[in-house]
Length: 349
Ligand code: S5P
Image (tube, rainbow, N blue to C red):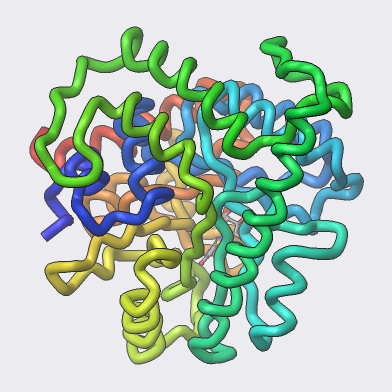
């Protein structure tokens, strides 16, 4: 049923978890269902890319483990760009171990993903316990994190509204509830300059203008969520239809934490399902290369239109299609427009 519903209406459904609602509103306001896959190997490249493309995306996907010099500086600068440009961050970690191990991988070590990425993902092959394990690790990380933020606020200087720099002063507050409050300012600016005013929805829980709703959601302490990999884009992947169904079943048991799937098609089958579908393996072939639909290493591509209009996918994930362009900002805009047009067509906007 949500196939033809607008993102804004889906955000306002009573059982939509806060982070899913936040993302759906953000997509509505930025008119973007584009996720950039920032598959680069240095902090400098990551930050340059996020700055160039940030206005066109709702989500930036990272592989932190391929960044040579990943560290605290990477995180602080990326969070600052995310705050200014209003996108969420998705670490494509693809967890796949026993519960106890994934908890540590999620919250500790050099990556400490739970501290900086709103969204991450997991495979279900270790069994369903991976989901509650990550959920409780997220809750503890957030609790610890909020304590840290409050401490820093009481002792630190006020947040600086200056543009992102490659090495922000270490005294600037980390992202989180504080960063969120600030980001709503730019979100309201975006509304007035880019989109029609959106009329309030008389739905329980999340009624109001998107900017107000985002502000309220931004104050919600629990802003971490998980995607399950229900399907892959690569040729010959071994995620069978039965496996895919098991992912959906487990997701339904944890609707407050699993906000959607990495999948090649929408998997919302029951009336209560409002999962967001994130779809990789998307590219717009350059003119003259329409026949090229793979990368020679198993990746298979389809167009944003095939994914969004043909299979009900919500967010398209694009890496090399944008990374290899001469003008990445311009190419990201081209993908944003294509994917958004397909969405509008799907919902009859
Ligand atoms: O099934 C999948 C799942 C993922 S998360 N297929 C994928 O390609 N991905 C990721 O999406 C992959 O790890 C890479 O980061 C991105 C696709 O990159 P592209 O350059 O092929 O667009």
